[in-house]
Image (tube, rainbow, N blue to C red; front, side, top):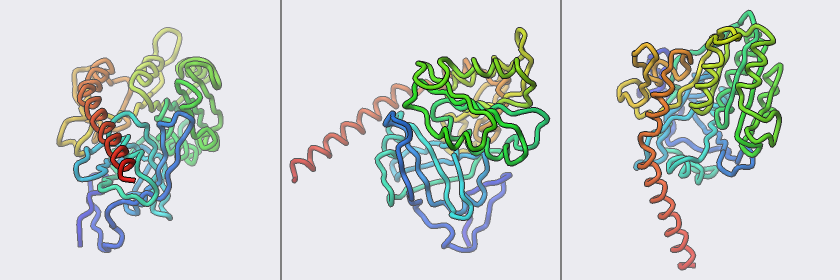
Length: 316
């Protein structure tokens, strides 16, 4: 009998069959999303995680023994097949290393599902779900579960350009209304996601707004729904995918300040939290505190890749 670190309501699941807990975790499918060349989708064999996963949950990955632990939100799950889907954008060494793995390769550590239960229930009025960039992916399971609960779902997908958009058909399948917008106008409406959001709030009553994407996007969504000017206040949730190490509230790396001077932890108090209490200005500063180290790490990895490629070329 072994203890499996998968949590649900802070309880450990006791695993009686070792066959259900095979390590490491195999990549079953991989594909590039959009036309940017930096966004990827992977399906991982994780039977125990898939069994307990819900919308809003996340996992912590460690690719190899020398790798860092980093969080990714579960973008989909299949309990029967025992798989979860992750979507990530290459921004640093770890995500670039992950993008270099192929079908059949294995990831050393995958811990989850982590995070609290979220706002899935039947609401009186429609629900608006906003996904920005790679944040589109974790919007899908939330939209799917909210739709299954009997809600009218209005989805807004935003990106800098059409090359960074993906999963439009999947989101359309779980939405009553789908709005696309890009910063440069290359697809859908030209402009940011708060433009159609403002129009929707003026048009009809909304029960909740859910925003997942870049911090700056979530900040302005929360400001739009806070009840200023002629707009009503609408309950708003944002998903905070901050730096995490253990994912259980012990390291404090994911902490964020609230506007009333308090402190919460994205891993155990979230990752979905009330957007109107988050001190986004402070969080934006904290998000950039390791930029130099991340840049140096990526440059070293790129240099290693070039050296290895050169060695293989000379050897052949």
